[in-house]
Image (cartoon, rainbow, N blue to C red; front, side, top):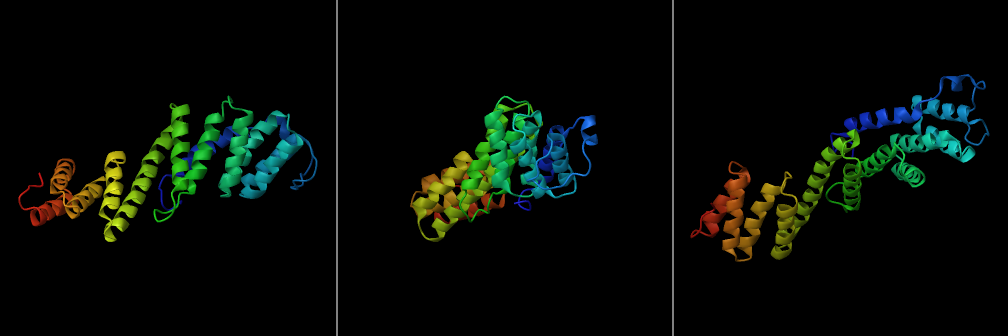
Length: 269
């Protein structure tokens, strides 16, 4: 997923800055105890346990850090540190690419602290975990739909935050991904001669994903399927829309030639 979408670095910057707030510790915490054993099953005071988790995260051992942050909550569930640890556990699991556990930790935080000032961060982290799991267009798009819903939740609930700003950028990419899936299915139906099924897919792109990079091709494919279905009038309408919206595109040039060849009595525009 990281190679498919170029915004991971932006999202990571937003996440790191949000995580920094959750990692803040009081000046007196560092002086407690001696060397801390990094074993999640050893009972210890909350300050030392939290600092051990933070040290692990700072060293890049995010998986161990996540377990230690979980231990903070288990050993000291009523401490203010437990709330911070829930968020840091979610962040650490995200860094280690254990997205399921990251989502669970973030959602547990939201269940216990729905009105907390860091709720926006937790919602954003959930959305980002789904975003990182988006598969290629040849596979089922359940993760993509979940991603879109989660990103929209961030924008709807926290419209004036930096998380919403990044979520809006990702929504455009996710919608482009979903449109690509529709096009992939439509082209398959078209190759199979299932013209009506193909037409339904291409029209869905034109009507619901008109701002994506697939819209011009979808209009051209509608021209193809309309002609194959024997409705040149509809083909002419779609070619006209293609010409008006994308006058200089290769897809319009192909549609114009197709209309001249298959429906000489009509014009593409």
